[in-house]
Length: 273
Image (tube, rainbow, N blue to C red; front, side):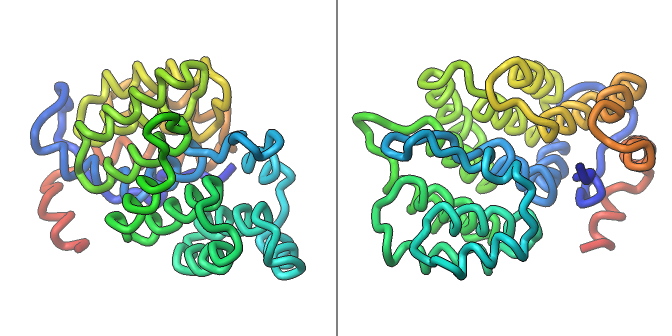
């Protein structure tokens, strides 16, 4: 599994002594640049929905079809919504959010008001930075009398990326009530706390997510990151070693340590921008 941390661009004060106000923009950059892909793909997975015969997008993706194979499957039958959803998810993971949006817009012409397609479309829009539109799509897919926990988890992820963290957490908690044994909303709640610098609370929820259905290596990597940012390097390294090859483990650890020791961090961020 490829490391995600190489995509992150943020900095933290040193030494770390708990949640500080100026961590907010830095950790928000973490989630938008890197962990957002986790929130909207690995965590907010398309789990089985009513009327989908137990369909799980992640189970299909686990077949490890290449992007080219997924594209061919979609082109073979553009009315196969599962092919479109899988192809769009792979495109998002490859950083091709605009193409993912285009694929799902083709599918929307056939499947109007389909919850699976709407959720996938909202994810693609959010990955493309079109948060207001994504929020509108996901809101329209949620039935107030019987909300779907997966849609709620995606809605929370979108709100988090819009900086509406308190609202996002309320939505995650609603999803957790509906699906207490699912990892996705619990992990997203942990990432929400990471965005505002509450790393201890983030750690608590990420650890809890790992005990639930759907726990995966992306959640483990996020936990390692949060632990590393608290200065617990040996523990973070041990978690990385369980899911990554040695070279990526050391790359991630060097990056975390560099962030924590970096001087003139905000000047560096301005120069990078």
